[in-house]
Amino acid sequence: MCADRQGHFWDMHDRLFANQAALTPSDLLKYATELGLDEAAFQRCTVGHETAETVARDRLAAADLNIAGTPAFLVNGRLIAGAATLAQFNQIVDAELLITARGNASR
Image (tube, rainbow, N blue to C red; front, side):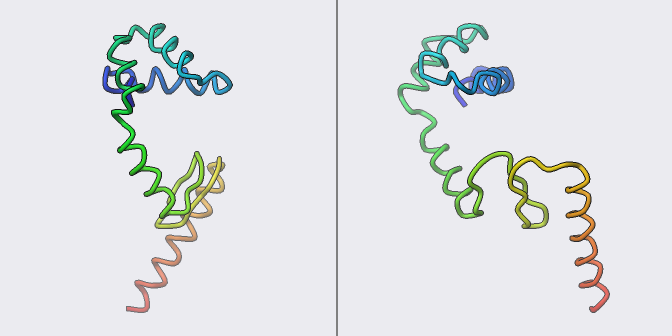
């Protein structure tokens, strides 16, 4: 979120996922520097917890939906937790379409 404030969300996203074993505050600052972010603004954002309220709100919303990790998807309210193949998505979408079609036919 702090990188996003400087227009580098996806750059930081990719860097974090590529370095999942190195996510200390000093690592984050190093990545911000490597990406050319304003270090002082980035550090104020992360140390000052400017985004903590947004993160807390997102965590509560995820918990309300029984989402405990990523990736997670909702298809018509149906949770798909973890990585899913295209075939699995197709199966779930087809099942949901069938349920909807049956419901509309009974009206």
